[in-house]
Amino acid sequence: MNGMTLGLALFLLLNLLVALVRVSRGPTPADRLLPALLFGTTGVAILLLLADAMHIPAFVDVALVFALLAAITGAAFARRAWREERETDEPA
Image: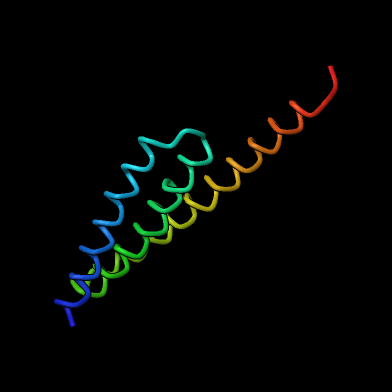
């Protein structure tokens, strides 16, 4: 079981590398935010897999913090993007 969980963690890490390429090439801020949110959720999954494989319960706590930060980041970006959209729609 440890070999399978470590293999899945490696696969998810490779997905993060692909997302890093997308962050560097994204033409708009929204295109850059989506892979950044992917970093958060995939990072949580990797930490949970490592916590199970290596029997380190502290990784679960770190994963919960990452999940909270990813949710806050997404909400902050949505609020900022919505505000900028409203400002450009208002007549001058």
